[in-house]
Amino acid sequence: MKKNNILIVTVSLFVLLFSSCSDFNELKKNENLAGAVPASILLNNVLYSLNDEPEGMNERWCQYYLMNYDYYGNNRYDFGGGDNYYKTLKNVKQMETEAMGNQAYIALADFLKAYYFTKMSLEMGDIPMSEALAGVSNLTPKYNTQKEVFVQAFQWLETANSLLATEISKGTTIAGDIYYGNNLSKWQKLVNTFRLRLLIHLSKKTSDTDLNVKQQFAKIIATPATYPIMTSAADDLKFTYLYPSNMYPRNPGSYGYNATRENCSDTYVGLLTKLQDPRVFITCEPAQALLSTYSATDFNVFKGANPGEDQGIMYTKNTNGQYSMINRYHFYRTYTGEPTLEISYQELCFNIAEAINRGWITTGPLGTAEDHYKAGIKTSWAFYSIPSSGAMSVYFMKQGSGISDASPYNTYSVNVDWDTYYNQSTVKYTGNDNTGLTQILQQKYLALAFHSGLESYFTYRRTGVPTFETGTGTGNNQKIPVRFQYFDSEKTANTANYKAAISQYNNNDDINGVMWILK
Image (cartoon, rainbow, N blue to C red):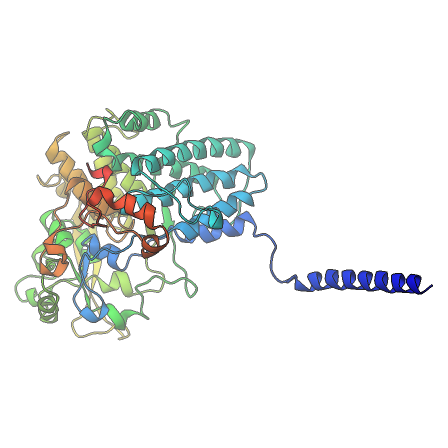
């Protein structure tokens, strides 16, 4: 009897304990937190990382504008670690897991992997890829060569294009897309347009039979039914700013911090004025000190600073009105500004023109290299609402005025004529020669101003066009560096693989070390 009582008590205690543990485990669950995040939410999150805001060091490293006051920054090329997109890529990987059989999300994940991995590789060279994103199961991933990164990216983009074609034909839908309103046809065009961009980046690697750069480019252009690409600015991948949740970085609220500290770079302004280009009236302001000699609509009144100038000297000259400010009407007047173009039709036009110029293809969707060259310029003009002929109004900040004043801008009328502009010897396409290539690259540089992140820097690094100016103010012994360093975390947490990666640069994480894509 005693043993039976003990057994009953023991069993009762066990049941009570088991029940209590079960209840406790239930209590540990937070019903306010989702057990799984829908693919649409993850897509929305990872797409925000595509946006390169049109303010900061990227634009200065592309030599569009300069900082003349050291409290707010400098113009030095002191390259540290490149962009770290691994956290974003982990969310991309999770989006694939949560896709629930919707292959459209898988296609977008393939595009995003190609985009983020190649962007990091363009900045730093060899990077962890195939063993990355494994979490705690592999905290020391090996580095893939830059060539391997691009080969894999092309495979992802090929798959993405194929999957999107299938899902479009099935009427598959997605949610969470902040760029194209969930339009998969737009995404398919983007995938192939981006692929052409990557192929242009490989212009020094056309003899590599593993890449087949020219053949890939030609196949996409020759088969638009299989590989659709952008056909107008309506297809642009553009980030649109919203008030008050996601404001344009330059706006009335930030005016007092840096509007008078930003003057234009001679690399940018000098090219605009050399070409007598009306875009200078939209993005720049006259140098106040030159208004006593020239009218406000004379190209000679616009003057940029050499990026290599000592910053103290630049500040003094700017204070004395010797340099053009960035146009405060255009950039600071509203809280939503203008959309940032990440990958655009105008860029595509110049990329196709370059491919024809280099002999990769003989014709494109619009015809000759010149046809695409002209379309790229015209599309850029249209972005700034510059007419092909007639008068346009331009606005410059009055000297001594502030943005909160009742009437802070002077208004002028400028006559514009496309034919007159294009028929200048400096603008009219000379043909498929080195001069023509330089013209294409110069116009691409002007079109990408304040857009597309480091794309203009990458183009300069690859081609030397336009000529970037240097001096004591740019640092690095007056040289433009050609790569970013690796993250500090790689040096300490992935030391062996990090050291193997920098061995090609004489065991130094050298910003002047020449990566594979540039050889």
